[in-house]
Amino acid sequence: MNDKVESANQNGKWQSWQVYVMAAVCLLVGVMVGYLVRGSAPAAISQAPATQPAQTAAPAQKQMPTLDDMKRMADKQAEPLLTKVKADPNNADLLNQVGNIYRMTHQFQTAATYYQKSLDLNPKNVGPRTDLASCLYYQGDVDGAIAQLEKSLTYDPKHAGTLLNLGLILWKGKNDAVGAVASWQKLLKLYPNYEHKDTVEKLIAEAKTHTGKALPQSE
Image 1: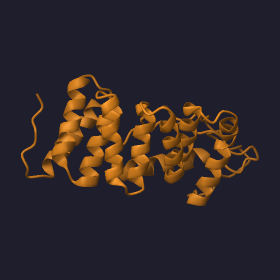
Image 2: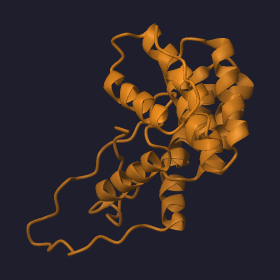
Image 3: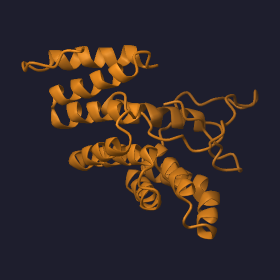
């Protein structure tokens, strides 16, 4: 996850350690599933200063933020977008951007709400639907996540992010290595030069070692 980080507060409260915070958040989100990818473009977030002033001694250990901290950060980040949404409530792209902000900061229920609003306006937009599926998964709704991904494939059967995430959730959420491998092999068949091909191949190999069932062979 290569989402960049925007300064959420002009008074400097977050600026000295925001990069660390968001890197840790993104890492945690990745670890929860392994390799879940975003379905849509990340929110427009700019990077906070990477270095502190020379006269300020950096603390020996950074304190991880609480979920309340992350919610306040997300609310601040989303504020200008929400102002635009009030003026243009039927703008599916704006609603998707708000969802992205809350998703990045582990506010998965709030993110899912905005993704759903975006999809109500533009149901064929596969990106937000894939992101909605990830939010549902993180909330423990595995079946709901799979249903969203399967619906995405009815609109775009070749969507790489959907195929990758479907395999991950089938495997990690349903212990369905057969379905996972089938989804990943379809992905690689459609995109032989897929940018994360090595990762997908490793996932396939790992999934095959965790089941005694006969798995489909790549063609």
